[in-house]
Image 1: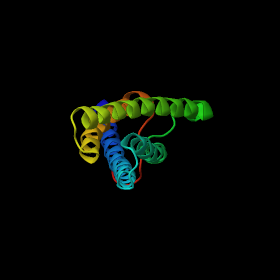
Image 2: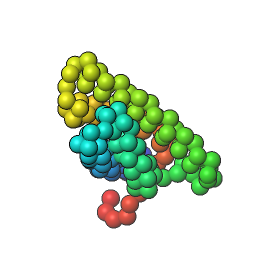
Image 3: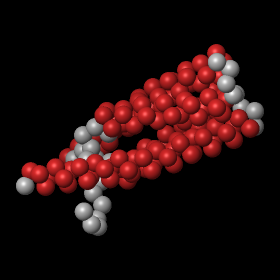
Length: 150
């Protein structure tokens, strides 16, 4: 039976990854949409990045909390949720800092257009953000089990 349990755990992990990826795609669309809109109206790219990242981050937390991860255990209650929120905020502030630094490098030092810089930086930050979210922010949380066929 241990083999069956590992198959079930593997299936849950695949569902979790797919859900996280779909939500990440939506976050990226929100982020890029807000950034593009703000650039079009002549907002400095650093301000546009902060606003856009915040919009994607808010969506990310809500959607991943509801659809991708569940609380560690009912016994943790609000304390577990508060810890997760603090980790989420800290990690995403680090990701925002990294994205701003990379945008400055790509835009100011290399001379790329803001939208091209944003696209390149987004690819790097999305990969790093997934890793940190999985390993630290939502660590200890189990994938949400959905009904239906297994």
